[in-house]
Length: 167
Image 1 (spheres, helix red, strand yellow):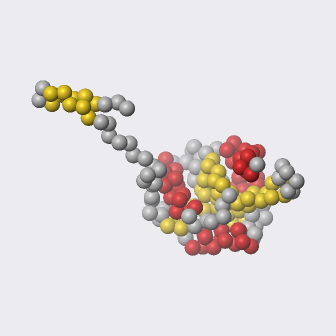
Image 2 (cartoon, rainbow, N blue to C red):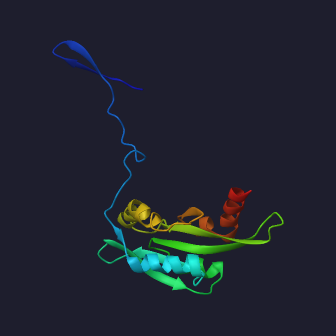
Image 3 (cartoon, rainbow, N blue to C red):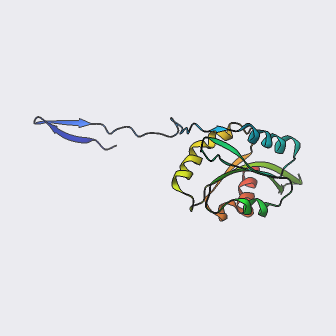
């Protein structure tokens, strides 16, 4: 730890450095709420398997997380294609994969935070600060996938993460 030495009236004085702000101690909070329709769509995906994926976005006034899309039948590539190249989104995908053991086909609910490099900084900050408000409403999520480009959301990358966690 570096100490700062100053001279005050001819005397040497040592001051400890200012403590750094820790995001772990003080999580960011944006004051954004989650729309009930968005939570209801998630419950339909989780409990009734009605949708393959849903995406969420900020309302135009940036005060609420709202439902963006809900898609009943889609392949993974269609989910990836639905993520806008210059705007942030949250998503939940019912990820189906073959287990490496003899358990056969399995599925996990994955939460995606899509924050592309080309999105505006202010939007990225708002989505990062508001993520926990949505996550707290979505019980039963297996893991979170944070992605800033298509390589981080590729099927192979996500499959690798999921299988490493389950083995």
